[in-house]
Amino acid sequence: MSAMKSNDDIEPCISVVMPVYNEAVTVTEIVELVLAQSHVGQLVIVDDGSQDGTWDQLQPLAQSDSRIKLIRQGVNQGKGAALRTGIAHATSEIVIIQDADLEYDPKEYSRLIAPILSGKADVVYGSRFCSGADPRRVLYYWHSVGNNLLTICSNMATNLNLTDMETCYKAFRREVIQKVRVKENRFGFEPEITAKIARTKARIFEVGISYSGRTYAEGKKIGWRDGFRALWCIWKYNFWDR
Image (tube, rainbow, N blue to C red; front, side):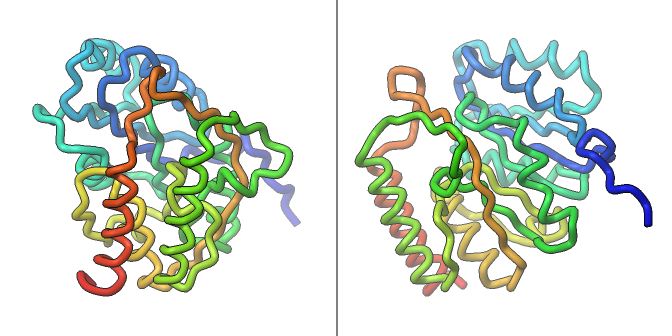
């Protein structure tokens, strides 16, 4: 029997898709963290019309590492639109969604992709709420209530038992995610993709992740209107637009 490979022995197999909008404060650091992971073979960055100097920071980064594919959308269209563009350009075996802030830790990619590499899963969600001993920054109570409510409503519609439907960290086998037609332009991406993946009968796993959320003063963008849109998307993509 051959020896089991360590995480460092795994060949680059991940395309990271990173939507970016006005993240000049954190974008250089997160790009460097992503590229430091040995599994990353490609980083697709979609600048969604940033106006704070983010694009200027991204260009020298792309010139310094051939793994970076840099795309700019001249007008801000939203996270879902940026992801739709980025996913279409992914070329590696596994696709991971990565926000451009520092709320999610790229060092946990090996944990996310393990069920896929072992042949058990087609899709893996990184849950902020079943992370056990992993650290999680304590922030907004009503956000956690809203996340829980949206996950429950999504689960009722999809018959899945996820603990964190709204998580950013989702890993997919590329052939699974590239078959899904994403329509939502903003944060409705999460309930839409969950509804559509559930219908594919893909094998879905969850793993616990750490989470270092940020405040609105630090640049958090999602708001209560996006919560209502997510509820609409749960109904729309599970019962109407199938």
